Amino acid sequence: MVNKADGTTNSKAKKHQTENQTGINNNENINNNNKNKKLILPFNSNSFNVKWSTLLKEKHWMGKSETALKTALKKLAEAGEEASMKMMDNTIIGGWKGLFDLEEKKITKNEGKVITKAQDLVW
Image (cartoon, rainbow, N blue to C red; front, side):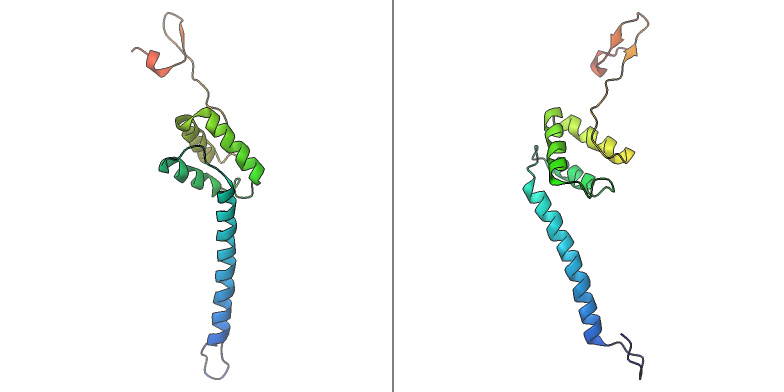
């Protein structure tokens, strides 16, 4: 608040406002940390932890329930770490609300054989 006489700020009011803002931010951090503490990540790698944290900061993922997050983690665990990283990338890039299985791209060679794995490609 501004003191009417000399235009200076009231330090008590400013301190109170700062404490209130800090309290709100601390509560948000505590809530986010508590939500993450209840969840057991399926993989221990730093890259998975970073990707998961990034996903949780996305607009459509911030308000998800604990049950929804546990179900998502179960789906990621079933897919394996490499696939789950790609699934999270796709979700982040697309701004999606959910996780989707990776699709195998089918490529046909001149002989008409359908190839489903990248290692089977021969150029």
